[in-house]
Image 1: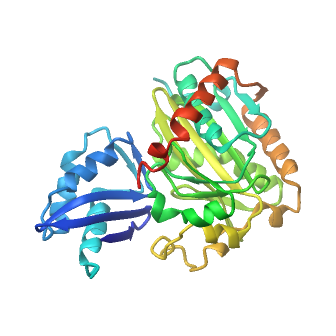
Image 2: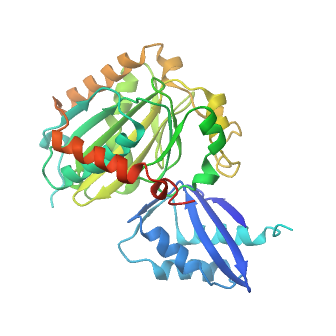
Image 3: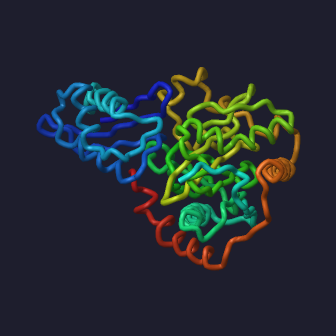
Length: 96
Length: 258
């Protein structure tokens, strides 16, 4: 499943994932945003892995924010924008 | 750490013969590190391309951004750079690309938005001298009345910041759209649905050869900030060539975000 969100005043935030037993799996964040250190990408992917497919935007954003160290720099990206992209991916009809 | 000014530094120019896309990726890595470690003076590097390439950003999905089959058909190499930002479609002679390797002190206390504009103020001045009214469009674009001219990206390493920019001199829009997958969501707040129309290259706006535009840019940097003609050290080149082979050519790195 695939979701995209162009953060207003920010960059394109893309999520690819699958759902297994009601939980997010194989989550991959991508896009043309800026994020340092670059290892924070994996941190965000891991924070989303295993979340309930029914988690709302606020809960998803909180789990991303809580996983990130204080010195992580985001430009054109935010935990909230990641959460929107996840919800958009989940709202798509799964491929038959 | 005190904030420094451009003139506090002994700026060096590197402008060499054309180099491969992977070597360019590696040189950015190595030279940022050298400036951060204090072994190299702050440097402006103008790139010359030996081959066509698609350069994707650090966090872009390879399969979402690039039509691999089309890239192969056109003989275009796909590489991933160390900085975030969007994909660039490069053909030798069609772009003007430069890197600035600076100590972090130069942008100390500036927001990201201010730092991007700060690093390219000299380019806006040079474009003005060429008759192009251009301005910075946050987060990371240089644009004009005709459309986008350039995109910038930054990455911070140790004590240094890399700011690199690709400007469109000329563009084969049909080929670009064949190779890059540019989604509708990305264009949703750009006020146009035509990706080709988003870019208005320097060739049509200046009527000047690419080399003349580069000469003007170098002259403007030199006048505003000071600039000495420099060169790559042999050990820097050896290091970059090794990295180009081991890291930047590897499928692991290029496909790091699949």
